[in-house]
Image 1 (cartoon, one colour):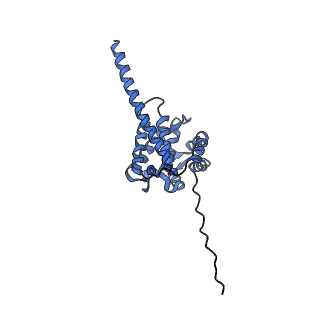
Image 2 (cartoon, one colour):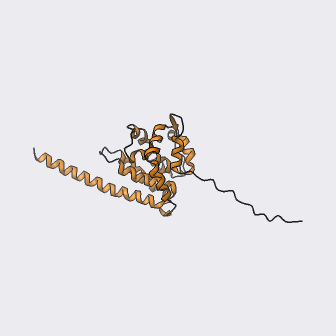
Image 3 (cartoon, rainbow, N blue to C red):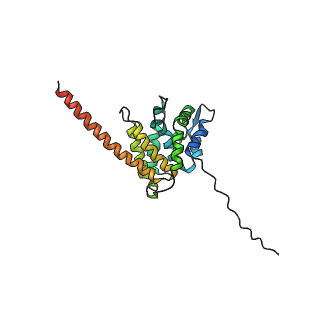
Length: 211
């Protein structure tokens, strides 16, 4: 009797779509508004990274969507706080999952941001694991950058948004270099804000002395 020496072949692991691919698939839908739960389902275990990236991308460049900040700002704070307190493994609150995001936001992101995002995704890879493992400090950094986005400083939305997008993409791709770069950018941004505040106070005092 012949013995079957066939070596069983493990099924190939299912390929996880990139963030740019997920955004393109959502933008291609016909629904006027897309439940955020659908985004979570597409993201799998990387939900915090993709959620942060989705909500911060419209702030990285001046998109032709005047209401985008008001729609996306509060969820950005909630997701950052959730990551800081509970870590990546925790499920997002139902209040966030039940949000409906206008499809026009996805369309604008795909049109203006997706090409750059796809290029960054090709460069990104798992590395610098020491930064990737620190989930709660990552959440604190994201929360801090989200709060800076709310400061009423003209033309200051893009710098913290770009730093936060770098951290979010790093979380998404387990790329510690991107997380470190976004964090370093936040430190530099903090120094710049202190300088602006000091200069504004000096200028105000100088103007007051004229009267």
